[in-house]
Image (cartoon, rainbow, N blue to C red; front, side, top):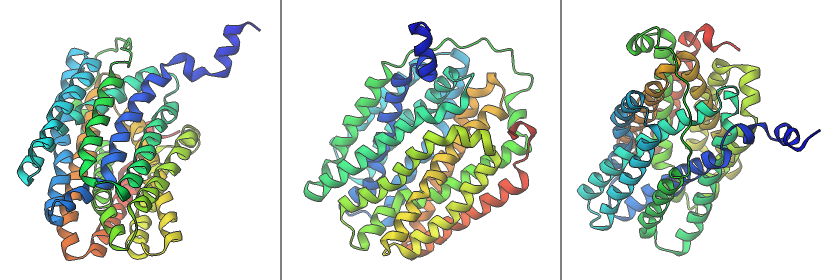
Amino acid sequence: MDKSHQLSSSSSIEQSVPYWRLSAFYFCFFGLLGALHPYWSLFLQSKGFSAADIGLLLAIPMATKIISPNLWGWLADHTGKRLLIIRLGAFLSCLCFLGIFIDQSFSTIALVMVGYSFFWNAILPQHEVITISYLEKKPETYSRIRLWGSIGFILFVLSNGVWFDSGDIGTLPVIGFIILLGIFLSSLFVPNPTFKQHAKPASKFASAVKQPAVIAFLLAGLLMQVSHGVYYGFFSIYMESFGYSRTGIGAIWSVGVFAEVVLFVLMHRLLLRFGVRFIMLGCLALATVRWLLIGYFTDQLIILITAQTFHAFTFGAFHAAAIECVRRLFEPGHQGKAQALYSACCFGAGGAIGSYSGGLIWEVSPLMAFNYASLMSLIAFVVVWLWLKDKKLQH
C-alpha cells in the first residue's frame, strides 16, 4: 500500500476539505459568543440598565439578523463572492464595534450593536454554504468541523468566568474586540471553493419557501430560538441571584457546550440512523423540560448540570438537523438564500422576540420567563409533529 493511499484511508475528511482552516473560523466565531453571551447581560447590568433595557439591547443583534443575512445572502448568490462578503463583513463589524470605547450610554451601545451586528450577522450563513460545498459527498460530517466552534465557546466562557471573578467586567468589550479581530484574520485563511455550476432552479425561491414543510421548519426554529432568547439573555443574571460566582457561572455554561462537542462528534451517525424529523422532535421535547428544570431547580446543582447537558440537543443537534433540513428542502441554486432565511427567521426574529419579550416578562417574574420559554418549545414540538413532513426528510 503506497503512502498516499494510507493517508486517504486514515483521514478522508481532512484530505477532501481544508478542515483546519474552516474549523478555525468556527472556533473564533463561536468563541465570541462564549465571551459575550454569558457575560454581556452582567456587563449591561453593571452599567445600571434595567432588565427591560437589557432585553432590548440583547434583541438588537437578533433583529439585524432578520435583514442582514437575507441582504448579503442575495448578494452572494448573485455575485458568487461569498468569501469576499465574509471578509468584508468581519472587517466592518470590527470597525463598528470600536464605537463602544467612545461612550457606553444606552443610545451609544444600541448604535454600536446595530452597526457591528449588521455586518457580523452576514458572515456565518455564507461560511456555512462554503463548508457544505466542501462536504457535498458527505454532508453529515458537517458536525465534525462545527464542533470547533463549541470548543472555542468553552475556552472563552471558562477563561472569562475566572477573569471576571478577580478582574473588572468592564474589560468585556476589549475581549470582544480582540475576538472579532480573530474572526477577520481567520477569514483571510479560508480558501475559496470552486462551486459547481448548478442548473437553474426548477422553481422560484418564493415557491420553495411556501412549501408546508418549509413553513413548519421555519416556525419551529423561530419558536425554539424564542425560548433560547430567555436563556441567553438572563441565565447568568439568574444564577448570580442564587449566589453563584462568575467562575461557577462560566463553568455551568461550559457544561452544556462540552456536551454539545461530544454530540457533534456523533451527530453524523445520528442523522443517518434517526433522520432529521425524529431528531428535531427529541430536541424540542428536551428543550421543554430543560427550561422548567432551570427555572425551578437552579439552586440544585446536580439538576442544573443535568439541564445544561440538554444543550447538546436543544442547540447542537437541533442546529445540525436544521442545516440538513435546509440542504434537503431547497435546491442547490437556492442554498445561499435559504441559509440566510433560516438564520434571519430563527436566530434573528426568534432570538429578538425571545430577548425582548423575555426581558419584559423577567421584570414581572424570572420564573414566569422560564415557563414562557418552555411553552414556546412545546408549541414548536407540536408544529414539527403535525406539519414537518416531507419525503426529502426521510432517511
